[in-house]
Image 1 (tube, each protein chain N blue to C red):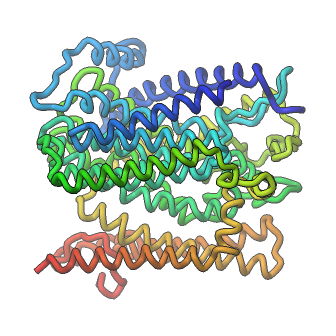
Image 2: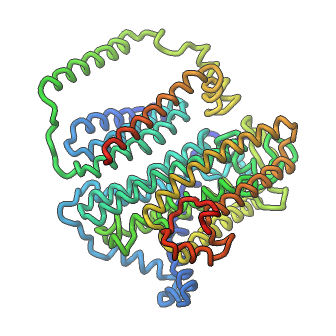
Image 3: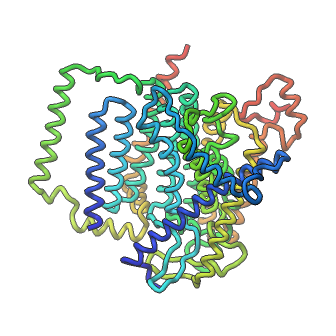
Length: 426
Length: 175
């Protein structure tokens, strides 16, 4: 079937933008509710339960509160940028969804409709480009508020985001090496089980690229600026960090921006490492549109619904995971945060890219066809490297048990994240 | 029709951003106008089907270099005092002459309508065939890592020299 063209394409794209944007905002609102419910569950209390059944209308009440509260503008603030900062914080997180493939294509009377708002030829680079703009909102807010706490928060936030962006970008290079393309739908289809075609790894990339998935998840979390990486708003030190001076709906936009960013990061992890909208152990969803317009597989509308459900479930589980982390792990110290980014993740990713490149070259030279064997070899290699990484970074906590850590602390070595050899630990 | 509209939009944004960047006194305003101009430029690149260039324009300039500029402006806290440009009359005169000369050269090229400055038809077709075969990024990567490998590596060496130089300068200050 031909792809959509002309008026049908314009109408379909507009519909996709509207539906997806509304869905995103609904989920952002709901996730603020679930965050508090999960916090309540983890801390053994009820969470919101007064407004509406199960406290579900709390979201609406909060929205109303944001709108009705008085807006305070600090003296000496730069009005233009004070107003612009919340917008700059919210927009990048939502605009990222434009290149997210969220379901299998659906055949319509007017042609094949791809379930992605914009299939940009450089989709992956678009993600990097937009993600790198998220820092402007924080910096602007910190600077325009004319307050020392905000300013410190803005400085911290910008340094943190610039640092982790490098690790984030580098951790995606191995994905591109396996896919051989930068278009987002290609990244999804490379993770499906294909009977034929150029890419048939038969595994979601979090298996053959375990280590880089780990680095991406941690750096992605650092980019969202949530606990344990919320140094930019550390309320114990900086009152509220970069948004100290913000009130009413302007604060509300920062709030929404944080959750939109969270959902975006979860969706990116889903696309890059968890197979996107692929349903595991089922070959019926191996649908793919080649560059010349030929369709592999049999797309139907119920498959589109099912795959959209798979995408949603994966993303929401990841959001849940991030919320769980937030209420479990304490905040990093600032020097630890910087050390983790620059001295651990970046060198590790440099070495990893070279090791993976070598491994793929050797596998190609040995004549191993791309398939289960190929990804199996990569999985074994990754398991070994992951073991080494955990052994080195964990500072004797998990592998050697907590007692060695206590002894170390008594010895006066402060808990630095720099890797130490096991002999130093004893 | 659509393309003409978007070209005009981005062109006005780019030119306006560039003018406002020079005209505004506040360094942070000026920086944000420059970011706007970069965005508009990347929009124009997309209209020219140069997707890779557009993405890299945003990643490198708007996302990295401008953020560092902003960081430095904030660290020096230049933004709140509206200082007048420190350079003297002579520098302004030189800038005026250099700027006018550049403008005259570009205007002359545009007015003459010289076709030889544009890409030839066969090279355009070759590029299009390459993009179809290897994708937007692959078409650029292929010559970069085969025909132009040595200049490419030399450029990376230049960047390495700059990094080493920065480290040397930074360490000299420390006691």
